[in-house]
Length: 404
Image 1 (cartoon, helix red, strand yellow):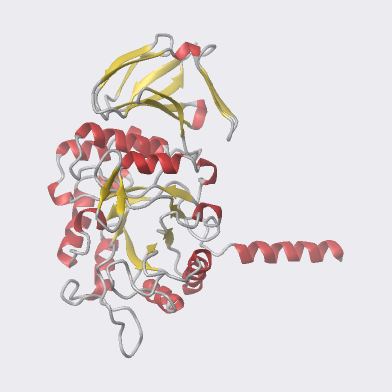
Image 2 (cartoon, rainbow, N blue to C red):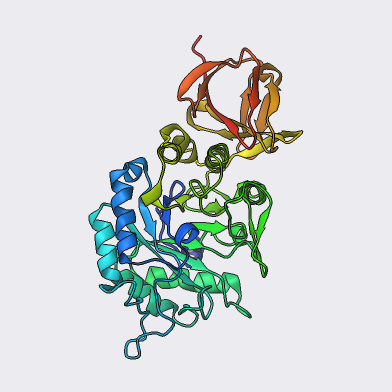
């Protein structure tokens, strides 16, 4: 009897701690979000155009399947009768269910935004005190992904607020990814795993490679600033719960070198790949970054390990990530604003990933080098890598054991 009671108590404890829907985001989520390029200037026409383009450009087939509307879709006041959130009738005259139905008809998944505070970051209707009602509303319009922000949250306990919303989503009965956009202020990586599928580890990102962008009252981080913050937290990341260094700024005004390096590091870190550019104006070069199946395969690798920075020297960095089948991804990154000559002798390196007990021993084993951006095998680790790495650029390789 005692054993039975202990087993029941354990089952109850496990059930109580697991608020979120399980089985979602077994690899990092991929998709598109409206915020980086449109801010609140969104409407039905634009969103439908993004859905159309995600299909016609091949992005959906490449794995980008979540289309997420960020802040700006709702009014400040709720419905006076039902208490539900109200879509801005000027922007979305047919309502949000019609938008969701259109997105679903394209074979995509529908994402939406709100905030744990009393108002959203743009002063519209927040969720505080309406968690269960809002979750039911999202379920009724077919939402598959909820991004939940942290503005106007003074005096609110972050863990409690996000846990309440997670329970509300489960109670509503529709499985949806829950994205904790709490900016890392309250260390969500320490408590977010049973609550949501991803959690922000950083402040908002901006389309600069390093440093930050000053808005006056707050600062948005550059790409590598966010990467530095996120890289330290790799032990918390894995299937169903991912560190999120924020959305991609690829295609939003940085150089092609910077876009390529940005995408490479996000893939090494097993970060969610959420595009944030205007797909109506996408160049072939930018599209080639998003559609690089070998880079995506590194991000989506089923081993689900967040990579790490192995080496730093004179603004050159070596990032690595263990992959399935004893393969590895390796990225040589130049953070300098000028080109650098760089040499890396593979045979003198034995890289230990003590977190997951994986070893890349290039002294005793020769690996083929597949160049992810050039899309071809370019040699082996028997010969040192030597190249001029352009400013804010990266070489990105997949290493596989050479057949004897």
